[in-house]
Length: 253
Image 1 (cartoon, rainbow, N blue to C red):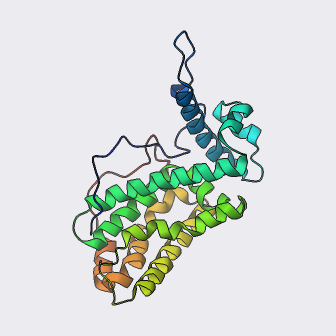
Image 2: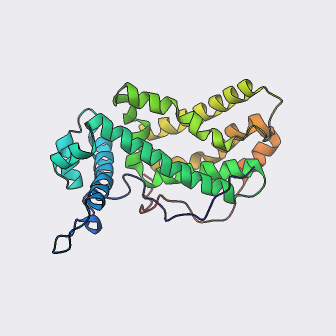
Image 3: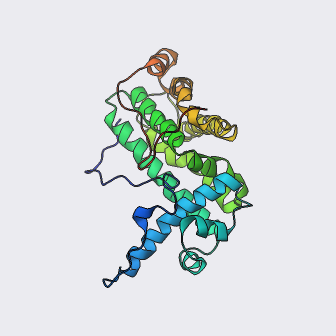
């Protein structure tokens, strides 16, 4: 059942968890020259954050490259050294952020124990709590992606494939062909994705963790049956709430 890991590296911040002009990431000037690669990496991270905040607050169409650069404290020439344009920057930020979320979910899934339904619940809990802790990223990745062009929408449509790792073919479930199993996973993940997106679009991002019981049931019941799914949905496992690295949880509205 479990995903295994090598020793875990330091957590990578989720885009939008910090302000783009975070003083801790200011480029230090002085006699010792900072390597160009380190400068570019810092500028890229700041632009990720600046883009998330600008797109979440203004909408994709209204967020200009100038606005993103100002929010990140990065010049336009530096922006275009890193990205071909706004769409390219959006896609890079989205891909990076989704990779961060998936790694956090994988860690929770791997740590949850031998029962698949409990592991699936742990991964879902992490997803909901991380998105709740960085509402700007949730809005950018789930709502504003609709306006970001066909390439972004193709990335969104491939998301169920990324979540397939939490539904192993040799795990619990009805006797299905590989094609049928893949279709079932796509339907289950798509339903959960639509439910989460609707909550974010309705500005209920801070309350996403409240969806955990019903989403746990909906995601696990097709594989373990209603009784085991209900037990997993009612689970009250101990543990601190999960936030994205460098984020603090907002108070529910």
